[in-house]
Length: 346
Ligand code: SF4
Image 1 (spheres, rainbow, N blue to C red):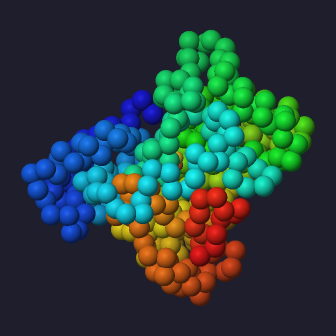
Image 2 (image 1 turned 60 degrees about the vertical axis):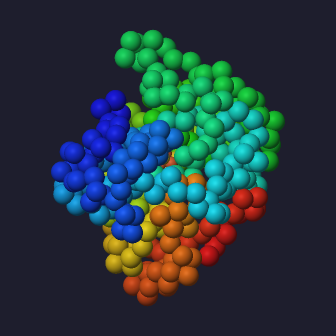
């Protein structure tokens, strides 16, 4: 992660793409473009690990992986209906680092660090400041020095709240990305959750097995496998080009250890709003024993309007998938509506 590319200009330079060519169709190139991109990056910095970058096609401004991570001038547009908290995270906050939206399960946010910055992220404006592990250095910790790492005090209210919530039987680690935590920190957190007797399941939502698959080490797999909690891993992958041999191997390590893996994707204009692409994505996953779980309608976060696909178009795409794939390979197409008691099927 320390070697990640941290500017869109650098990303384009390494891919040999002129900046003007990278703009979205319809966004007329102007002298102010670079300034707008800089503004977008100031609000949400570019962060692209080399392992993910290596799967992009040089010279192709429409590359679907590049599109997901490239800061563009359109992000600075104010579009009605696009807000800082489209899914109601603030209202769902129980205590530091803990949200509850749905019955029986809570969402723990132990870190604000991600392995990649997706430009459409619905948490791109989330206030992680009350989570101690909001920086890369804090997330990785100081294990290289051999020091024992204790869980940050900011996790304490989260764990205490779990003890007081007997109706909660599942903890979802989300973020940020929980697999950006160092192994000792993750272990400390999982142990604290395992100690709560009424919690039965641990779900880890992570893009790390996709963007830096080397994170899925034998040590990590062994730790998850040995948990007393039924542990599920939900990865996030939007395009079949994201799945290379290293990703396949990482996923196989999890599944061979008995850890079920699901994929969720976001429907994104210019990335995967195409039946052939979605079909291939679903096929690639079921061929690897991963169930396509959700296809998410884009959450209407400020700065991401250029990624939105009309829901009617989304329904047509899913209808096409139904005619091409077995039922278990077709993801559920959902929207997240702030305050709703569950995800809403489209
Ligand atoms: S990995 Fe997930 S949480 Fe992180 S930026 Fe991407 S979509 Fe957002």
